[in-house]
Picture 1 (cartoon, helix red, strand yellow):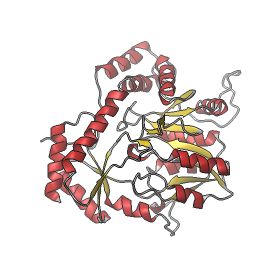
Picture 2: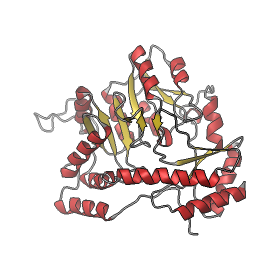
Picture 3: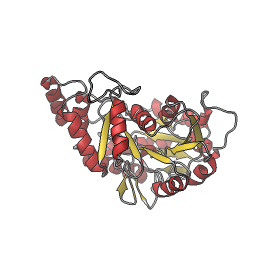
Length: 365
């Protein structure tokens, strides 16, 4: 059995043909037909009026926060278990990151923890749809409405996930997606913001291109950003998007292969799905009850010795030097991150390879 990577993109003739066409057209930068098509198709898919393509998921998040007016002295609530970009985008705005605990089952932000963290300085909440499972947007929106807060969904890892039948990215003021190479669909690098708010859309579109005036070329009315997607990225993204149902179906199938292969092992946990949610299983989650961080890392090394790649859960944001304040109030996050890892779950993995991974896991345990 050859080395089994944690992830790799699925590239077919469709992707190659679309990118080749974009290169041949001469429109290789931030103008070209594929950008508009990608935005229109993605908005329709998510069920929003607007979608705005960006250079990556992090810039999409920063752009959304900047557009809603997050600035110095504001506080933004995020889950402690997330990729660091969620926190970084808040800092780019000069605001303060408030990390709160997660729900132990779905690994997304805790509703109770949000309520406790709100202060007079709170400006927004960023729920993260982690590893493909959506946060409880119904309850989060109730809290936000009660306290007059903005909600921006970090849906970087959850294209196609749903809450009560409604797709993520359409359940708040704005949704943010990533198309990095390991995501469900990829444009190499790239991101997208979805929204129904016309004012917010126009503000983000304006800021995305250096805040250049439409009426007076090279006249800039605000401090803007260069957060545009290229036509080449969009061409790849559209080809991937046109395969999204195929990609999502395979993700679900891969998860079921793992669930069947590991069902007899006690003391482990795989991805959960709440009754109100559709999980898209971006990555297969594997948790070893009672494991410490060193034990988990040893387990990861044993998999690697057998030709199997894996990766640990994200470290708590609150443990990182730039966010550490010496006070940890996220006990669930600190318990979960130590015992969790992600297993290979890319599109082209075979059932035979998954069975091999399960066989090796059983042997190690």
